[in-house]
Image (tube, rainbow, N blue to C red; front, side, top):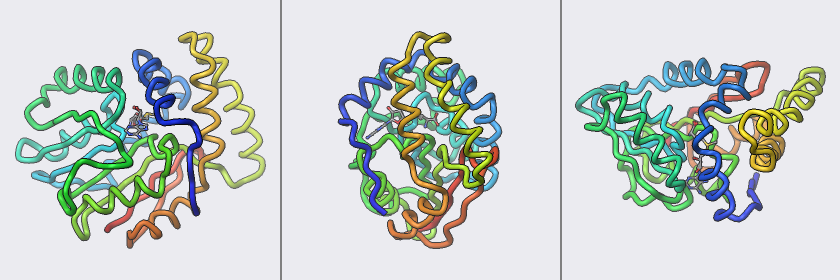
Length: 236
Ligand SMILES: C[S@@+](CC[C@H](N)C(=O)[O-])C[C@H]1O[C@@H](n2cnc3c(N)ncnc32)[C@H](O)[C@@H]1O
């Protein structure tokens, strides 16, 4: 399965720079507060060990980076990589406030071409980023490349409910998202784009197949909130 986001990368980058100041607030609003619980379960299942070296691809405002930094402990290290200066600025402030600067490095970079050698990390994560990159398959292959054999890769992403009744309700709810964004933070078109990438993204089964195609084994997934989101795990 080939999945490409046809919006030019520079446009996606400028969109995330624009929504960065309100990104955390809108995340809580759109997911009705559920994303924190999804992230908590993701960390439990990922079972990061003290001393691990982890990379959080498309780290945005840093929530998953910070959770990883707490889990790796003082002997571990975490890279948070993103191409949006404004998102990285917010992540840096949050990392500083959490007292985790000693074990987090925030890097401006492109998820399509990770600037690291093969087999460098124990763990790689991507949260709500895969549906926004130009080629999701390439990003998964890059994550496989930089994680050592039998390390762990996790993707937390919006998904598609399969039950037709749930799908109807989900579609109706998601149509209100750009309107919410207009009212809450005056950003209609930006959230219209994010709604479109959510709708166009693959199902949980298709993403599991993409994990395998990228070279992962032991691929599993867990759906959240009637299939509104899913956590995929695999090992290179
Ligand atoms: C929806 S946000 C998710 C942020 C964060 N991971 C989270 O869980 O909240 C998507 C992030 O992906 C970043 N991004 C999108 N395409 C990228 C790319 N090609 N390379 C690096 N970062 C990218 C955006 O700048 C944005 O910060």
